[in-house]
Picture 1 (tube, rainbow, N blue to C red):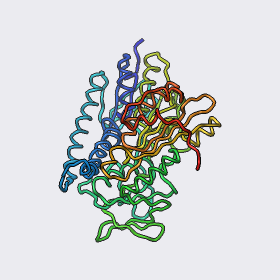
Picture 2 (picture 1 turned 60 degrees about the vertical axis):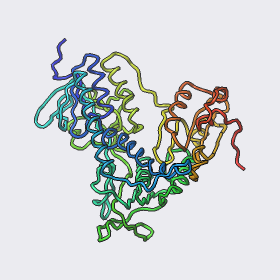
Picture 3 (picture 1 turned 120 degrees about the horizontal axis):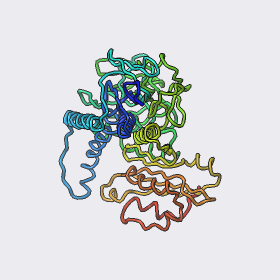
Picture 4 (picture 1 turned 90 degrees about the horizontal axis):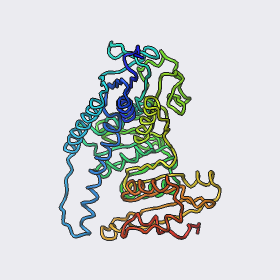
Length: 453
């Protein structure tokens, strides 16, 4: 039967989830169009994880130059050039934008440049061109949010921070999530004077309490001026730069003020008023377990639905959607034991339950903890310590949470996540022979449960 629609699937948003869904649906034989008005590859490729990780690499060189002296290297005084980093990053992102275009072109999915607006449940308009589709998929992601206050127009977000014309020698970072923590570490490592403000008593809400406290000590020790229970009252431009008035009456001078206080679903100008797509109380698109909205033929996935805002999650959701709707394969993504990392200095890696969550879920748990100076710093002289923590359900002996602050935590946690996904017990960890000398071997050599002194 020939469809009366122009496409079987119209995807709004060419980020990780949208491109994956469109490419796979096309592979199953669907006629697919993908519309994007800004970033090929979405937030992750353009103003998120990819450029952030490149800037983290750049920031770590500063520390490495200093550490090298303990190993016999005479390095002299290194100099950092912001324009070189920024412009090389732009070239790499342009390359990746082209890769995403080739991915869709190779899958025979039509890419349409422009903002798609829903006219009705089966019709979209892109710059005056109207098209119809059997199914619509909204995958427009999130957008940084800056609250309104006097001088908020002087604040910048993670969208702009990568491409500043001048390097901010004095940077104020406002926020306590992983984005704020990462940028504070990046610019501190690049040589800026960084002050990070957070309205709560301790940042990284949602992470394990020991991880949060240990990370705060290490980050403050690296040179970031951490100020908790502190908020911005106003920002004004003055002769010395930006004047930031705080709620304790003190004032900071800065070259830039980065607000990383949260992201909201990017739903502006989508035409949602023309369809019956309901939102949650928090403003996200409400979907069922199959990513279907209250308008039966309109679907949504990724950050716009308010789940775990991680690129691999959006990819998994895009794959599951395409498989079910166009491949006849009912395979839903699994959201338990999803590993994640915070690329601060030192890194944070985590998978599974926090200690508080584990006690609430399993009752009696066994806690293993280890703190130590990384082997590298026995010669570098750097006063930095790693923390590793493991949570075990006492009844089943299953490892239900693993957390780390230290070098390469993200890389280490990916392997740990596989074991935990497979249901590994503490006995399995204990029976595993470690790789020596590595930090990772600590996870298979922790034998004595931790107790309060």
